[in-house]
Length: 400
Image 1 (tube, rainbow, N blue to C red):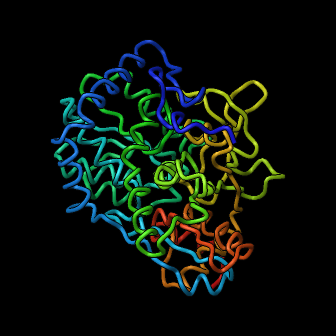
Image 2 (cartoon, rainbow, N blue to C red; image 1 turned 135 degrees about the horizontal axis):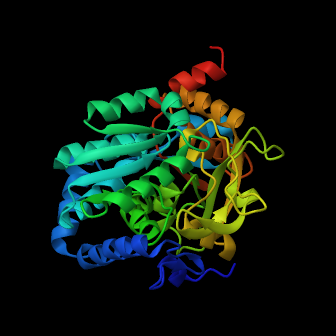
């Protein structure tokens, strides 16, 4: 492992040890620099930190529990399994943590209109929620395929006053929604703030999203010390773009004894082309303004992808995750659609918790990992969202 703690903070050009940056037209670069400068100016001020802390506690409902899943631990056999319950946040997932930080930044910058992209719809719902709270206009871009997979979340966004725009280009999923949002930003940057939902895209978004999601890792680190008197052996989270994982990892990244594991979507199998295993099957290239690992064709264009979980259905990954892979600080494993569904049903029936299909990928790997470890070892897994939104997908996949 050649990880250096300094790599977890980007350099002046937004690179995490070579990954990230701003690969954008000059016009968009100036927009990103404006955001970066505004964030740098306020992020450490007492006013901003106190306001964010207020909303995270009183509105989002933090802190979330670190729950010892005793029955799941017994069923899996082996290591103790702790679940960081981000599914208990307001709106049902970790996405609201980042939304509250970015939307307060947008208000500070005088922006009146918020745009966002979403895959599973949880970031879209969280953005629509934050916009309603602060009285801002909101438009959410969502691939047409994802609007069909996540009809409930589309309706929730509309209930909250957001305009939902189905994107009909390309594969009609998350990557195409990002393209549409960037095009909107080019036309309307003067009054519009693009609220990115994952730790992807150009600088300063990977850094900002990590900072706002780091509340997960900070809480989990303190909580496991309170529960067990020591750090965990493993910290595990699902990875699409990587926001929930980078949030959890941030609490343990400088603790060499804690192994960091991201779990990607293997879809219908790594031997097919229907997966989203960016770290396993991809290679570095440029996607959405950043140099990072991605699934790509020989000509460099992003590959078509598949996952039963819309939130993991993305051909790239956040720049900081790419750095963690290359330096060996984190490893990236996979779980298939079928394994995710089985894990979702297992947690539902054993612990009475219905997890999101995204989180179920991490859960599938966690249960396999636990079997290989001793009973005194500890796994902390980020349960990043609840599964209400996925019930109809699961119903189509299994006969109950």
